[in-house]
Image 1 (cartoon, one colour):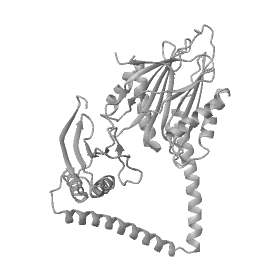
Image 2 (cartoon, rainbow, N blue to C red):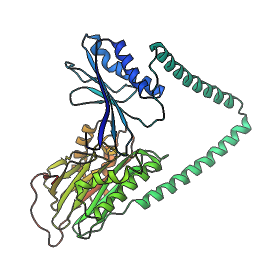
Image 3 (tube, rainbow, N blue to C red):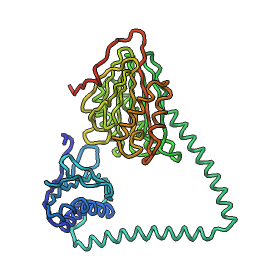
Image 4 (cartoon, rainbow, N blue to C red):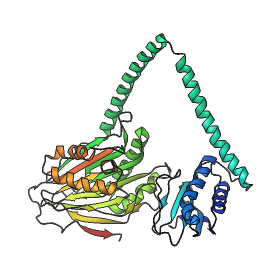
Length: 430
């Protein structure tokens, strides 16, 4: 917890009964004014996680706290802890997503951004009935919508159907025109590769789907007054125009801070401080890279973004791992900087998670990316990003916006020979 954060309240209780734990979770949700549907999801999720332990006769500790930080909505955290569980619980099917902490406990975090007020504690059956009524009301509303649509469709005659076809054709033309306009606007926001002697660059971008041709994957690259190249890769939460706007705000803020002379490891933190007061809901990962085209020196800083992949000219390869937290994350910032060097023939690949997580397994995706990059490293630079995307997306289980950048060092006049070891040295905060 930073100096800007504080816990308003922290509760911890030990339970040996699933019924008691459910009542406690429901009480926490009611005290903090959670909406009924979110409350029900939390109760069901906590019961599913703790049920195995309690059924085996092992106690579960339930903890809750409210964490407040400046310029951000408060966070309600609820956690289930145990001391002798052998396996990490399966969280895939929970109605409310959770995370497994280092000690094996499971935690839920919920921003307190709604306008609900704390509810008075009352009988358990009353709360259950309220949740059931809410679920039934939603089911009734969906059923009513379904009946209405069926009735409307049943009244459609041949003339209306012909008109419907005409309208669909018109709407499709409008969608294509709208999508083309959005693509042209987004292409205008994406700068062409920087032309600097000693470095060649190329980029590939593809949206998650044709219905949303814009997205939150964005990049920026430009030359600094000292001749070095700065590169920013951003992945803002969401899809569509709203996420594009968020990513654009991040790249503009980063560019301004970089031109003001801030260190890379401070730029992530300062970007968070600058943007969050204006957009508290903004969440984005980012990777910052600085390249000296003459010496080949490279410096990186990271905010929760997938690591860069470096392929040496002699066939060696490795990911440039850096710890950090992105924009909108708690304690945003890059923990350190990483310094390395690009020798002539070395290839640096920057990307967003849409490239490596199309099959939902990031580790498997990173391994496949190494193989794909090695196969294509000698191709013309303009072909590499697109070829990587094609090979990585032979099977797509999780469609997402995809961004891939390739940077390869050539041998400019006056280049400084020699490398920087394997994959770089780390430079912590001063």
